[in-house]
Every structure is written in C-alpha cells, then in structure tokens.
Image (tube, rainbow, N blue to C red):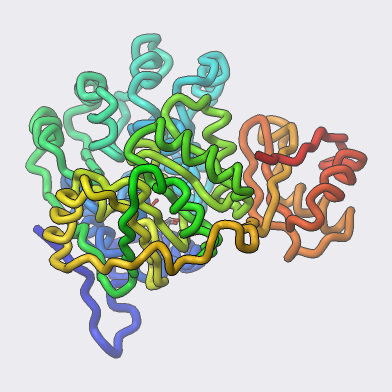
Length: 472
Ligand code: ADP
Ligand code: MG
C-alpha cells in the first residue's frame, strides 16, 4: 500500500485527525499542539495501526513518524494498569529523548502516563530507581534495554506495543541481534510497529523474524521539487572548504546543515569556518553525549549558524526550519542526496540546497540527476560575494545553567527569572531546554553577557545558580 496525501478542495478537515478513532481529549490536544492535518505518513499508517495491525512504515526524516506510532501506542494503553505496556527501541539516546518528549506531548490528554527513557551512557542506578516507581512506556536503546531485561529490572509481560524507530539506523549500528532478542521476550500477541527512513535489505529480514502479516506503508522520498531550489557549483578539491564560506556569506542563511562524506572533512570544515568567524559546530560519532546534546541545542536555538555533519550523525535528528543545506561533498548514493536536501524546504517553506562538486564527482551528480529526473543547474563560484564580506552572526547566544530537572527547574522558572526578575522582554529570550542536570537558554546576542552575569548573581527557583555563556 503506497499513499500520498489526499486533499479535497472545500473541506479544510480533509486529512484531519478527527476521522480517526481517537478520544475527544486526544483530538483536542492535537489541535492545541497545532497538529491540524495528518502528514502523509500519518494518514497512511494510522488507520491500519489503530486497527491493531503490524506496520512497516517508511518515510523521510521530518515526516511525522513519531506521532504515527505514539498515537497508536497511546490508544493501546491503559493508564490505570501500572505496568510497562509499550517499548520503543531507538538507535541513540538523542533520538530516544526526542521520542520521549513527543510521546509526553501527545500523552498530555491523559492523566499521569509515565514515560521512562532507558539509554546507555547514563548510570544504571538512577534508572533502576525510576523503574521501581513504575512506568507505562519505556523508550530506550537496545543495549541498555537488554541490560535491564537480563537484570530483571524491566518486565515485558504486560507489553502490548513494540516500536522500532529508525530501524535502518539501528541496523547500521549493528543492533540486529539485540532487537531480535528483545522482541522474543515480548508477548506474542503484541502489535509491532517498525519505522524507517530508508528500506535496506535487513528490514525485511528483521520483520520476517517477528512481525505478523505487516502492512507496509510508504511515502515516496521524492520532494515536491519546486520548494527546494538546488544550485550546483563546480569546485576544485583545494577550493572546496573556502567555497562553503563564500556560499554562507553570500546567501546568509540563518541555519545551515552542511553534509560531508567523512568525519575528517567535518573537522576540517569546522576549523575553516570558525577561522572565518562563522559559528559552526560539528556533529560526529565520537563526541561525548553531553557534547552532542550541547551542539544540537545550540544549533536548534539559533545560536550557531552551521551544523556540520556526516549522514549517519544527522540521520533522524528533528531539526526544524533549515534555511539551507550545503552538500560539501557529493554523496555517491543518490537516495541519500534526496534525504539530505529534504532537510530544507519543509512544511511548505522554500528551501535552498547548495551543492559543491569536483570533476571526479560528476558520475555521482549524474546518478542524482537521474533519480530526480531533472538536470542540475550550474552557477559560477565567481558570482558569489567574497568571504570577507559582512560576517555571518547568529541572532542568539546560548547560556548554560548548571542544574536541570533533577533540581526541579522548569522552562517557566528560567523565563520568569529573565523576564519578571531581571526585566528582559519575552522577545529577548529564545528556546529553553531543560535536561536532567543542566539547562540551556537562548537569549539575544546583545544581552548575553549581561544576562549571564545577572543570572549568576540572582536566583532561579530561590536557588543561586552557576551560569556561563557558551561560545565556540
Ligand atoms: P520523523 O520521525 O519522521 O523524522 P518527527 O516525528 O520527528 O519526524 O516529526 C517532525 C516534526 O513534525 C516534529 O517537530 C513534529 O512535532 C511535527 N509534526 C508531526 N506531525 C505533525 C502534524 N500532523 N502537524 C504538524 N506538525 C507535526
Ligand atoms: Mg523519527
């Protein structure tokens, strides 16, 4: 079953959630969240999923897959039963955190649904204590879930929904056997939902092991071409990184995701950009979890202009509203190109995809033209303004506050300290991220230093806090 969004003129509620068998409270909550129409993958996956069918769903990153499985698992959930009824497996802690956040938002309609995240890189002790308090929904990475199953700290006998999110990425990371082992420990009568951005061979093999007559729903990766303007520039190897600076200073996008084919290239590019005064951060595998979190927070709260990443590192990240994507290297896999440029021009906004290609990448460019069914538009680098033009500066700066959920800090407390206590306006404060042990708040660049020292001297929730400005 392949699906595309259906629209019928004159009925604004076409593809609305209200056609689904969801509770009135859930429908009201969706409306509050601004989820007015289903995304294509939601429209395709939710009807069979809410009938209890096993689902294999494939759609690109950013297409709303999380809500598709979250609404299903919530529909299966009995909040009065204090036992784990859902397990969601994710490849990384970051993705597990994002999924947990989305499930919590969607679960607001019901009272007291407990969602617990269980991932590696975090001490077991705290997780054991949390589990003892009971949980309805567990979101975690395969390795850590296996640990808990082996210790007997996690029981799955009341489980009714098993979700594999980013299944392709979990396979990339070598989790095949772990996933099968975990699935075998779930009750046979459960519903299994598998979500993936791509459909490598391993998925069929995986689903054959433990899914029951799954319904496959797929939304094509091809984008509505008009929304994304693609520009190609021919470069020599020696000019490539400098050309990225020129693209940035010329087009001046507020947020750019720059894809490189290797980690080494990511490192080199960040060094070159930073040397030119462009705020850039790299995301690659071997960063410590805390560093990764910081990079993502700073990029998504508009205090870093460029995020430089490999495909693996960027997969699955929910980063909204990217003005531009730069393909620093041409990917040899044309399908990957489609995914890369799909990070810009989302949800009806127009996007810019800038591509650099050297002579020996022209073969890959040809494959991309083929899959897109359109010829590349080439532009000369010489028409770009030089990199020494006005510097590209992000509008916000991130303040790091020591203390987070464990200290019972909430976003409202931070906003209150900055506005009610210190007299800044709501407009001068950006995104606030409260993590377990630390909090990040974006503030306008021109007040950052002052706000940091005033927060340092003041209090949040009656307690004095340590605050520092995060700079490159
Ligand atoms: P995926 O898992 O497919 O990469 P996500 O589930 O992370 O995508 O969703 C991407 C973004 O779209 C999220 O910020 C989410 O809140 C938003 N979103 C999901 N469904 C809807 C909807 N029906 N209407 C509006 N926004 C939505
Ligand atoms: Mg996802």
